[in-house]
Image (cartoon, rainbow, N blue to C red; front, side, top):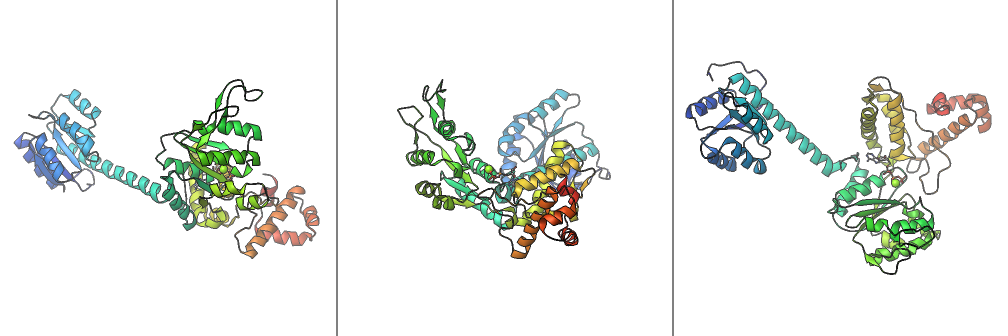
Length: 470
Ligand SMILES: Nc1ncnc2c1ncn2[C@@H]1O[C@H](COP(=O)(O)OP(=O)(O)OP(=O)(O)O)[C@@H](O)[C@H]1O
Ligand SMILES: [Mg+2]
């Protein structure tokens, strides 16, 4: 290696490098050249000295010879990997010892260089190793930050309202406490339930979701608690229930507001005793299962109406997390929208990358009675229909007037003028649809003049074609 100054072939990262070689001349020349390149350099004459140096101070890269007395470069690499996984290792192998280089890469070295070392090549290799290290650190940090502060992996949202939810989840996840998640449809309750499981000490064990609203009474009980052979007509063999399947893990009782009263009694007994009895069985068995329950119904109102047992409600309501509607966290709409564009563009191989600012503005202003799910669907369609990189049109779903029980009415949580406009929009959209877009007839249906309807359509920015022919 010559000491002649050569222009550096690549922009240099800053870094601390430990050179390990038993040959004094090689150490010396590497030290001088690497220092000239702007790096901090220390030297060690063998593996033991190198390990000692690493214990004393952190290094970005260890540049080590392979053939050394006492400890080979490969042994050094092996001993470093567990304790200093962040430190990059570049090995120097003798001329013609390609097998050594390959073995080093297999053993976890980041790169190799053949002796005699060319200065240019060395600078390129070390710069690359430093960059990779920096990148890796950045990714780890971003992941950790997203995970801890906002995201729990797939969860998007930074608004104060959703952060509070994340904080509550972080606080309760590690315990075995029963958690009740409530909130309007499509707000992410199922996703949050899964996040609770993933952040608990049960994360390696099963996560079982039961949709309590999807099964008729008899079937629901056998689904939850299992049955013995012959418990009822058709029970040809014994069947462990979902509680048993979730042993050691977490069970999500989704749509718990839909459970029939008779099953509620049995569920309460299970929650209190921690034991289940299969249908048609005579013995009980203990289950170690963390329970999370979710519903978009207002359980207090259900109790008042006599559809939900008060004792079960109290049992469930120990740690209650109320998930906000999307309208209560409009700050998150741009972030969620971007997230869905990226996700669907990737899934469908579309070029879409971003939303036009006008489209974003519309999305933020929309009431979203179906919350995140509705936003997700709107963007899925927009991505599929998009042609270029920018999405400048999203068909906004019309606001339904007849809400299913327990769902938020459009406009809930909105100032009155805005809510009135939304109600107006819903009525107009409905009339337009009923009359296949013929405005004169829609106006008659609404009891207003044609020009009045026209004025309102303009004011609300309703795209007649879009709402009628979706
Ligand atoms: N914060 C979020 N980040 C990313 N995606 C989300 C988020 N919240 C919800 N979603 C997505 O929105 C959709 C609806 O979420 P989810 O099924 O969890 O809603 P829900 O509250 O259980 O609704 P329902 O009461 O109707 O069952 C899902 O596809 C989910 O992935
Ligand atoms: Mg759900």
